Length: 54
Image (cartoon, rainbow, N blue to C red; front, side):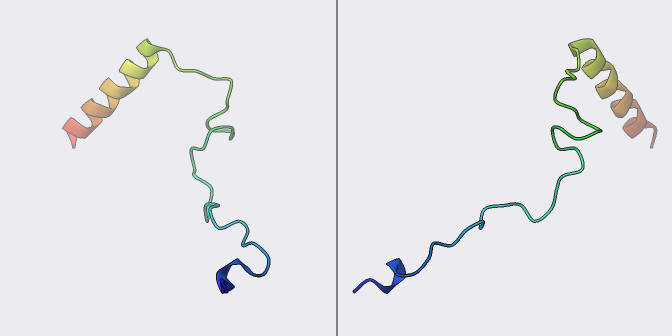
């Protein structure tokens, strides 16, 4: 007899324990906003300059 198959199924084991701070659909990262390539490059260059200045 396969005792592992008896009883109710386990539920919800694959859910995350917390929400990410930058998850899609939140106030900081809404679904409808898409960054252009120029904005992305400007943000990456600013981050590189800030890291280089440290």
